[in-house]
Image (cartoon, rainbow, N blue to C red):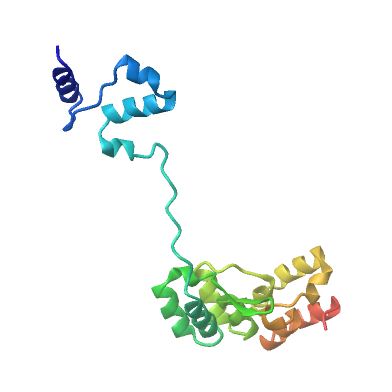
Length: 189
């Protein structure tokens, strides 16, 4: 049986459209083990099988959000519920996006709504996956949450939020009198 007939029979038996490479013993010995294995594998399997992944790969992450888009979203959440809803409807990835104002001043849309005393915007953001923080809890009057934070770490009353705004100021702007009393009694100024 000649070489071309062997190649044709191998190609037919594996349903291959193109002939395969069959190595002689001398060729096989003359190659590295890895090279020989690769030659054998690539000769017997169709090219599309060679590109298949045995383990599913995670979906690649989308590119970072546009800095100006994040700034516009964070800005809208300070005062404009309709614009906040519209922008989030167009790009749900904005929900926890953080804008860097510089100098260590970072702010999310929820942070903006919180220091502006906008529980309506904050509630919308929270309902859509924003991450509650102590500043938002203070503004929204969640006294049990803030009391637990203060009990765990009394120094938290001096932690500054976006733009250096204190917990006490968050409570004051939202007219949360019970929260003001709790924070003041805990050493906030």
